[in-house]
Length: 249
Picture 1: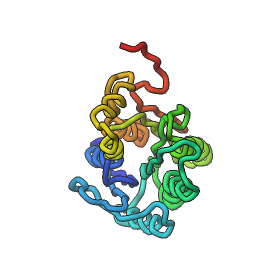
Picture 2 (picture 1 turned 180 degrees about the horizontal axis):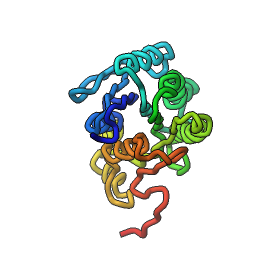
Picture 3 (picture 1 turned 180 degrees about the vertical axis):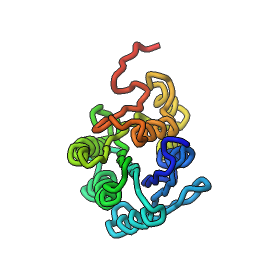
Picture 4 (picture 1 turned 120 degrees about the vertical axis):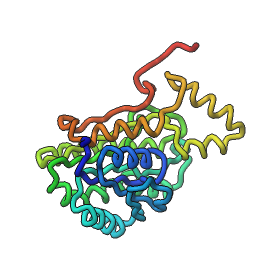
């Protein structure tokens, strides 16, 4: 028996990076897991893949209801689907602003909205949103992305207040720079990928990037019944980036 035995979970953006690591970990710890993604390919054995676009309300409702019917319940929702954006305040078009906010913020709203009727029947209901330290730490060329994650931070706290007395815990993780496929693409697109990666890792207090597995471990902690007193918690997984100021080597 493990902490997730008998529980059912949905992980959005579950086919790569942090989402895939989370789906794998929850399954290993006993949960029935469905990974919702645009292309739910390459999933571990035992993880159910469900194609769904979080910007399409009908697809989200069908996916959430279908998973709950398939597993006979729904206990955990990991709102992880998200996209990034690069640029200062003048660097992104209105269309890009609307698209990023639609995916990163309203996408979470859609999933939570359709999950609530099922979660209200669970004795161990939990929602974990993937935020970011850019919600409160200013990083260059990340205005749009930071705005979306600031909204996720506020959304998490408001949802936690709304649903705590229903027995639905809402929390979020705030990763720093994680070693994910998206970061790899950004580094590979640089003029000197090796130098870009060295600069990025050198900026970390620990001298390395956060791993997807480390973020997944934090998500699993907040989703687990073992963290039943964690409500409205924002858990940073960032190598100390937001809190530490180390002298140069």
